[in-house]
Length: 304
Image 1: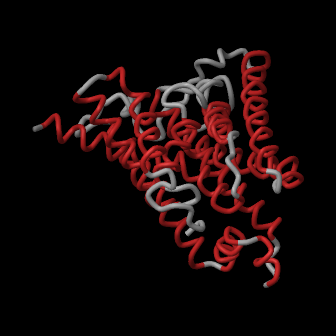
Image 2: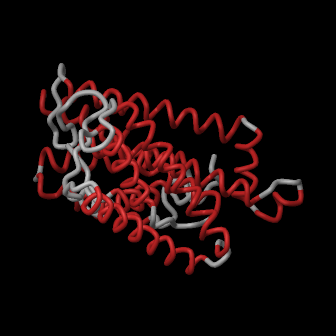
């Protein structure tokens, strides 16, 4: 019985982290119809920004300031990517897809060179502490009283606070309603005076901020980051893709539900079948949904 309770808690905490990881990916697709394959690199930027701010090799400041810096760095990279590249080609989906893939690898290699050549730190093992606590929850090291549980509670709480804030922003503010309008039709939005370029930029900045924030939480939970963390297990890029496919491309609500389905399925698979299936379980779910319900649970909704 205690094993089931422990698995339920672990699944709940991990799912909250997965939801934050996938939100930025969903936002950009929901508004611009773009599959942003640089999303994993944005997450890596967040982890490296926190490392630079909080580590002894960097500024040595508290990790909470590293979390703030990571969020801002992710937002800056997201905005720069849109302004520098995407806005010129956003109506050509294949070109955008290829470019985001190239940009993602460019960012990863740039982080690798900067960390190795300039900071003299192994870019495969950058230390990023949990925001609260010191142990890993993602490997099931959950205890009812302890630093890892506190950190998991922090992830769970901030995940829902940020998701709630995003829902309020999208549905209850003037800019949010403009995002909804652009997600339905650029031309229709333009007819009522909405600047689609500005809205797309805001979306990329928001998505980057979510990715940067998620990068710190993920690296802290794993015990550190790496310049390859976008594609290494749990591979946030692949994870995000699987989550939004399950939930329905472009649906924030679907992404949250998809994150919890994958989180629970993965945790129970690892706990009761084999730990070696950790990276495969989400891919199995992705394959099943693509065959049975390719539009996902909520189809392609606006960013609501």
